[in-house]
Image (tube, rainbow over all chains, first blue to last red; front, side):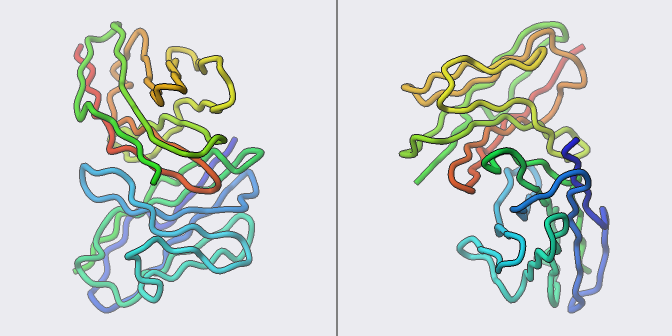
Length: 116
Length: 112
């Protein structure tokens, strides 16, 4: 149980284009989903927290207009990287919270984004 | 501010031996949870073990156990009978009120 999928797993795009990443909780309803960015050999950096049906809460320093997050249902959240640039190249991971208090996170397999 | 510290960037253990990964944290919250996550080369984050702060009993999951010292704000992970598949990055994490804080990670190598 508690499986989270993420799609696509790999994406290469040209500079200036937009990329959408989907995160789905497959066998549970997730009130809250999280989006992280991970640089090589570093820990996870929280980008934003999204609750179903409301606006995402972004961490300080994360551009809201650059990284659009939509949490349309209890099982789906999307991250859109708008007008992507090479510096946006990274590994993006989503997670969905589970448990009585939403205290346990289950993670998707991640999306590797390369912007040329 | 809530922080999580892992003072061992890298550790190694011989196969079948036991290893302990350290984690300390700082929080002013009274209600929180602590976790250990594993990230193998595939980069999929996997939940290893969780601990509720209000529980005094240390959590155990098969070969994985924790030593939770609440007063010292210490949360170490012990891996017994280490296996090659245990090689990974291990992250200690703190949860409180929809906030998650991850430590910098410890890279564990398992030597055959």
